[in-house]
Structure formats: C-alpha cells, structure tokens
Picture (tube, helix red, strand yellow):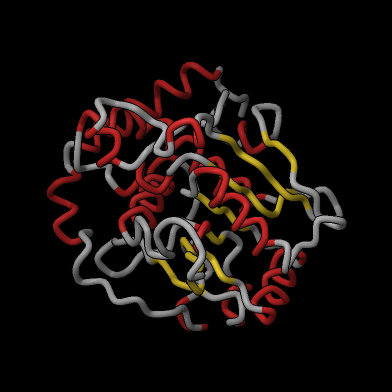
Length: 276
C-alpha cells in the first residue's frame, strides 16, 4: 500500500486520538497509579505478541531526575493501546482486554524475548559490570533500547558515562537523529523531535516546555548503531514522551498540545524496533 502524504496521516492520528480520549477518564479507573505491583517478567509471560518491556535499573546517588518507574504503568499501557488501535501490531492482552506490560532487567534471560525495551529518567541510572555485559549482549543480538525523559547537561553526561560501561565510545559513537532517519517515517511522518514537558510543568507555567530553562532549551534525539548499521539505542533528551501517553486523560489542554505528536513518535519507535 502506498504511504499517505504526511498531513493526512497526522490529521488521522489526531482525530483518532481525540475521538477515543473522551472515554479515557472512565477507563483510567483501572489504569491509575494504585493496584499495580512491580513484578518481573517470567518465561511464561511471553505469548508471541508484543509486550511493552520496561527496564528496572538501579539508581545512582549522584544521578539526576526521578527513577525507573516514572510514568509507569499508565504510559506503558496507553502506548500499547494506541499501538493496537492505530496499527496492525499484535499486542498481548489479558482476559479483560488490558495490554500486558512487563518489567525486566538486562541480567534476566527474559529480556531476549523483548524486541523493544524502554527506560525513563536515565539521568539516575547506575549500571553494574554484569548489567553492562548483559546490555551489550542484548543489543548486539538485535535488541532495541529507548531512553527518555532526562533533562539538561548533567543528566546527559551522567547517562552517557553509565552507558559507556556497555558500549565504549571507540566502538559505538553517538550521532544525531533527525527527520531523514527511517524511524521518523516508519508509519507517521515526524518532522522534528517535540519538546514535551511533564504535565505539572506545562500547566503551571502557562505552556512552557523547557523544564531546565536554557540548559534544556532544545529537545533532541540521538542514537547508537550496531556494527551492521542498525539503530539499537534511541535517546530522546530534554523531552518526556512518557508523560504524553501517561497523562492522556488528565487534561484536554495538555493532551491536545502534546498527545498526537507524542504518540506519533512513540508508535514509530516501536514499529521501527519490531521491523529492524
């Protein structure tokens, strides 16, 4: 099937999301923060369908930001729902129809059943030597890691310092990702990396987007390829895609401002991981 022009695709996404967002408040009664236990994936959890896998990392005392559970679990659930509604991706669901989402560590063998892994607030990560070895093995065997929601120069430097335990700079250079990369065109034509602040910052500042002022003035996407040229690490810095999914039903103003762009990029990233 020929790809539709960019504008109709974006309009279709916006309309589809807005039509279903009205029901979100009722649905979120069972998608709220309470009632979810942090349990790790086991072999029996995998059923051949897509699971949103989230990396549970150790926190560094000298890090910056929140923790592994920022935006969890609503972001994981909501992106999975939209992925199943707006694409042909086969998302794993429980008997009630709720998407199954999983927590992993790279040192657990179950990670190799996750073609897509996401982490948030990685300015606070601490990666042990064992986890560094396991992360590299996962990525070199075809895995995909997306890290999101870390702001400013200190968080960036901290994350890169930890990442280099697994992927040394002389072997795996970091490069800028822009609209010319296939990820930006996987399903929706994304022309720029949107700067998405957390909902409290956005509403509390009258719509401002840079959470760290001049130290986070521009959102950016960076990547690392494997030795065959496949993108295996996606890093979205100075932006918070997770909040654009997590907070879909909390504020119409916030949702309209960031939701369609957040979902467009998120769906592209998942589909890229599943097809590469």
